[in-house]
Image (cartoon, rainbow, N blue to C red; front, side):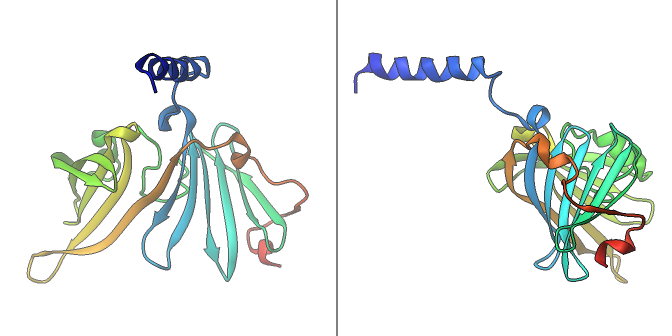
Length: 207
Protein backbone atom coordinates (compact mmCIF):
# COMPACT_ATOMS: atom_id res chain seq x y z
CA UNK A 1 0.00 0.00 0.00
CA UNK A 2 1.55 3.31 -1.06
CA UNK A 3 2.18 6.14 1.39
CA UNK A 4 -0.01 8.39 -0.76
CA UNK A 5 -2.92 5.92 -0.59
CA UNK A 6 -2.52 5.57 3.17
CA UNK A 7 -2.54 9.34 3.64
CA UNK A 8 -5.66 9.59 1.48
CA UNK A 9 -7.50 7.08 3.67
CA UNK A 10 -6.47 8.90 6.84
CA UNK A 11 -7.54 12.26 5.45
CA UNK A 12 -10.87 10.77 4.40
CA UNK A 13 -11.44 9.41 7.91
CA UNK A 14 -10.65 12.80 9.44
CA UNK A 15 -12.99 14.61 7.04
CA UNK A 16 -15.77 12.10 7.72
CA UNK A 17 -15.34 12.62 11.45
CA UNK A 18 -15.53 16.40 11.06
CA UNK A 19 -18.58 16.13 8.78
CA UNK A 20 -20.36 14.04 11.41
CA UNK A 21 -19.62 16.52 14.18
CA UNK A 22 -16.35 15.02 15.38
CA UNK A 23 -15.68 11.89 17.42
CA UNK A 24 -18.28 10.86 19.97
CA UNK A 25 -17.61 11.81 23.58
CA UNK A 26 -19.19 10.96 26.93
CA UNK A 27 -19.96 14.62 27.63
CA UNK A 28 -21.68 15.17 24.27
CA UNK A 29 -23.15 11.79 23.38
CA UNK A 30 -23.54 10.06 26.75
CA UNK A 31 -22.55 6.49 27.52
CA UNK A 32 -23.74 3.00 28.41
CA UNK A 33 -22.11 0.80 31.04
CA UNK A 34 -22.60 -1.83 33.71
CA UNK A 35 -22.47 -0.57 37.30
CA UNK A 36 -21.21 -3.40 39.50
CA UNK A 37 -21.34 -3.57 43.29
CA UNK A 38 -20.95 -7.35 43.56
CA UNK A 39 -21.60 -10.51 41.51
CA UNK A 40 -25.28 -10.24 42.43
CA UNK A 41 -25.69 -6.46 42.27
CA UNK A 42 -25.25 -5.36 38.66
CA UNK A 43 -27.12 -2.58 36.88
CA UNK A 44 -27.30 -1.60 33.21
CA UNK A 45 -26.71 2.15 33.02
CA UNK A 46 -27.33 4.69 30.26
CA UNK A 47 -26.61 8.39 30.74
CA UNK A 48 -26.93 11.35 28.39
CA UNK A 49 -26.72 14.78 29.98
CA UNK A 50 -29.18 14.86 32.89
CA UNK A 51 -31.10 11.88 31.54
CA UNK A 52 -30.44 8.55 33.26
CA UNK A 53 -31.68 5.02 32.71
CA UNK A 54 -30.99 2.19 35.18
CA UNK A 55 -32.07 -1.43 34.75
CA UNK A 56 -31.68 -4.18 37.32
CA UNK A 57 -33.43 -7.12 38.94
CA UNK A 58 -35.84 -6.69 41.86
CA UNK A 59 -38.37 -9.15 43.28
CA UNK A 60 -37.41 -11.74 40.70
CA UNK A 61 -37.76 -9.75 37.48
CA UNK A 62 -36.20 -6.85 35.61
CA UNK A 63 -37.21 -3.32 36.51
CA UNK A 64 -36.17 -0.21 34.62
CA UNK A 65 -36.09 3.37 35.88
CA UNK A 66 -35.74 6.45 33.69
CA UNK A 67 -35.09 9.87 35.19
CA UNK A 68 -35.92 12.95 33.09
CA UNK A 69 -35.29 16.06 35.21
CA UNK A 70 -35.64 18.14 32.03
CA UNK A 71 -39.29 17.04 31.85
CA UNK A 72 -39.86 16.83 35.59
CA UNK A 73 -40.79 13.15 35.21
CA UNK A 74 -39.54 9.67 35.99
CA UNK A 75 -40.80 6.31 34.77
CA UNK A 76 -40.43 2.86 36.25
CA UNK A 77 -41.58 -0.22 34.39
CA UNK A 78 -41.36 -4.01 34.36
CA UNK A 79 -41.04 -5.68 30.94
CA UNK A 80 -42.39 -8.93 32.42
CA UNK A 81 -45.76 -7.38 33.31
CA UNK A 82 -45.71 -4.54 30.75
CA UNK A 83 -46.77 -2.10 33.43
CA UNK A 84 -45.47 1.45 33.83
CA UNK A 85 -45.53 3.88 36.75
CA UNK A 86 -44.95 7.61 36.17
CA UNK A 87 -44.01 10.05 38.92
CA UNK A 88 -42.55 13.53 39.31
CA UNK A 89 -38.80 14.06 39.11
CA UNK A 90 -36.55 16.90 40.24
CA UNK A 91 -32.91 17.78 39.46
CA UNK A 92 -31.88 16.46 42.89
CA UNK A 93 -33.28 12.95 42.29
CA UNK A 94 -30.64 10.25 41.90
CA UNK A 95 -31.01 6.99 40.03
CA UNK A 96 -28.11 5.54 42.02
CA UNK A 97 -27.86 7.37 45.37
CA UNK A 98 -24.37 8.65 46.09
CA UNK A 99 -22.79 7.63 42.78
CA UNK A 100 -22.08 10.55 40.40
CA UNK A 101 -23.06 9.17 36.99
CA UNK A 102 -22.40 12.34 34.98
CA UNK A 103 -19.00 13.27 33.51
CA UNK A 104 -17.02 16.44 34.36
CA UNK A 105 -16.62 15.38 37.98
CA UNK A 106 -16.40 18.34 40.39
CA UNK A 107 -14.45 17.06 43.40
CA UNK A 108 -15.21 19.97 45.72
CA UNK A 109 -18.94 19.99 44.94
CA UNK A 110 -19.12 16.23 45.50
CA UNK A 111 -17.38 16.50 48.88
CA UNK A 112 -19.64 19.39 49.91
CA UNK A 113 -22.70 17.15 49.43
CA UNK A 114 -21.45 14.91 52.22
CA UNK A 115 -19.74 17.63 54.28
CA UNK A 116 -16.46 15.88 53.65
CA UNK A 117 -12.95 16.94 52.70
CA UNK A 118 -11.31 15.80 49.48
CA UNK A 119 -7.83 15.77 47.96
CA UNK A 120 -6.18 14.30 44.90
CA UNK A 121 -3.82 11.50 45.93
CA UNK A 122 -2.36 9.94 42.77
CA UNK A 123 -2.99 8.51 39.31
CA UNK A 124 -3.98 4.95 38.43
CA UNK A 125 -5.61 2.91 35.67
CA UNK A 126 -9.11 1.42 35.68
CA UNK A 127 -9.28 -1.09 32.86
CA UNK A 128 -7.74 0.86 29.99
CA UNK A 129 -8.74 4.25 31.38
CA UNK A 130 -6.11 6.58 32.89
CA UNK A 131 -7.58 8.00 36.09
CA UNK A 132 -7.07 10.61 38.76
CA UNK A 133 -7.69 9.22 42.25
CA UNK A 134 -9.36 11.39 44.87
CA UNK A 135 -9.62 10.61 48.58
CA UNK A 136 -12.67 11.91 50.44
CA UNK A 137 -12.86 11.78 54.23
CA UNK A 138 -16.34 11.92 55.75
CA UNK A 139 -17.51 13.26 59.13
CA UNK A 140 -18.43 9.67 60.11
CA UNK A 141 -14.81 8.63 59.78
CA UNK A 142 -15.48 6.69 56.57
CA UNK A 143 -13.26 7.17 53.55
CA UNK A 144 -14.06 7.06 49.84
CA UNK A 145 -11.60 6.81 46.97
CA UNK A 146 -12.97 8.09 43.67
CA UNK A 147 -11.39 7.10 40.37
CA UNK A 148 -12.00 9.71 37.62
CA UNK A 149 -11.26 8.72 34.01
CA UNK A 150 -9.46 11.46 32.12
CA UNK A 151 -10.20 9.92 28.71
CA UNK A 152 -13.95 9.83 29.42
CA UNK A 153 -14.46 13.54 30.14
CA UNK A 154 -13.70 13.06 33.85
CA UNK A 155 -16.32 10.38 34.44
CA UNK A 156 -16.13 8.67 37.87
CA UNK A 157 -15.56 4.99 37.03
CA UNK A 158 -14.93 3.55 40.48
CA UNK A 159 -15.72 4.44 44.10
CA UNK A 160 -14.17 2.46 46.95
CA UNK A 161 -15.78 2.94 50.35
CA UNK A 162 -13.86 1.99 53.49
CA UNK A 163 -14.83 1.98 57.17
CA UNK A 164 -12.68 1.91 60.30
CA UNK A 165 -12.61 -1.28 62.34
CA UNK A 166 -12.33 -1.45 66.19
CA UNK A 167 -8.54 -1.17 65.79
CA UNK A 168 -8.88 2.13 63.92
CA UNK A 169 -7.77 0.52 60.64
CA UNK A 170 -9.63 1.09 57.37
CA UNK A 171 -11.32 -1.98 55.92
CA UNK A 172 -13.04 -2.29 52.50
CA UNK A 173 -16.82 -1.90 52.68
CA UNK A 174 -18.08 -1.43 49.11
CA UNK A 175 -16.42 -1.16 45.71
CA UNK A 176 -18.66 0.21 42.94
CA UNK A 177 -17.27 0.09 39.41
CA UNK A 178 -18.43 1.12 35.95
CA UNK A 179 -17.48 -1.64 33.51
CA UNK A 180 -17.90 -2.22 29.77
CA UNK A 181 -18.20 1.53 29.15
CA UNK A 182 -19.41 2.39 25.65
CA UNK A 183 -19.56 5.97 24.40
CA UNK A 184 -22.98 6.94 23.10
CA UNK A 185 -26.52 6.50 24.44
CA UNK A 186 -29.40 6.65 21.92
CA UNK A 187 -32.18 9.12 22.64
CA UNK A 188 -34.83 6.38 22.60
CA UNK A 189 -33.38 4.83 25.76
CA UNK A 190 -34.73 7.76 27.74
CA UNK A 191 -38.37 7.58 26.62
CA UNK A 192 -41.08 5.42 28.22
CA UNK A 193 -41.94 2.27 26.27
CA UNK A 194 -45.11 2.21 24.20
CA UNK A 195 -47.96 -0.21 24.72
CA UNK A 196 -47.53 -0.56 28.49
CA UNK A 197 -50.39 -0.32 30.98
CA UNK A 198 -50.02 2.68 33.28
CA UNK A 199 -50.53 2.05 37.00
CA UNK A 200 -51.05 4.42 39.94
CA UNK A 201 -48.42 3.03 42.33
CA UNK A 202 -44.99 1.44 42.21
CA UNK A 203 -46.33 -1.67 43.95
CA UNK A 204 -48.81 -2.24 41.12
CA UNK A 205 -45.97 -2.82 38.65
CA UNK A 206 -45.64 -6.40 39.83
CA UNK A 207 -49.34 -7.28 39.60
